[in-house]
Amino acid sequence: RPTVGVLALQGDVREHLAMLETCGATSTSVRRPAELERVDGLVIPGGESTTIDKLLRAFDLFEPLRARIAAGMPAFGSCAGMILLADRIVGGTADQQTLGGLDVTVRRNAFGRQVDSFETDLVVAGVPDSADHPVHAVFIRAPWVEEAGPGVQVLAQVEAGPAAGRIVAVRERDVLATSFHPEITGDLRLHRLFVQIVEG
Ligand code: GLN
Image (tube, rainbow, N blue to C red; front, side, top):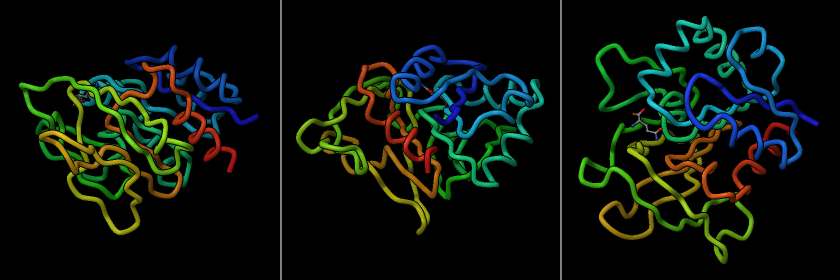
């Protein structure tokens, strides 16, 4: 049974913890460096990426977490978590930093002010059966992936509407990221995919 942490500075920590347990992992919240050392992989929930960035530094987690991701620890970021895992951001604040790990450029609040939130169905590569039973994706002031490097696998793109074609799920090595919030629909398939990645 792998031990999978959930970064517990902001966001839907409890939902992620419960879903990871259901998927066969031992889940634990991570708020301090000693807790980070004990996990085999980490979920970074949504929230406000600028706030999480500041809290990471206030909790002395920024550097150890950056280093573990760089050393290959599996990570799964949702929404603000995707922003934190991106090597580059567009639309960040002047002093905003990211942990990095994904060779992508992410655009913050990409879907625009008029469309703060929306929902759509997605086929997600690596998610079994999603062609017949799509993943219902909920976006909340979400980023999208503007550019992905050659080593990045595009797992999902918006299929219709004004954002059609936009990249909203990616994977590079053992780092997974979604623009949407997989913890709020009860669909366990993305968490299961991540637990399998952690199991290696
Ligand atoms: N807009 C937020 C940010 O830029 C992300 C929103 C979310 O995580 N739901 O950090």
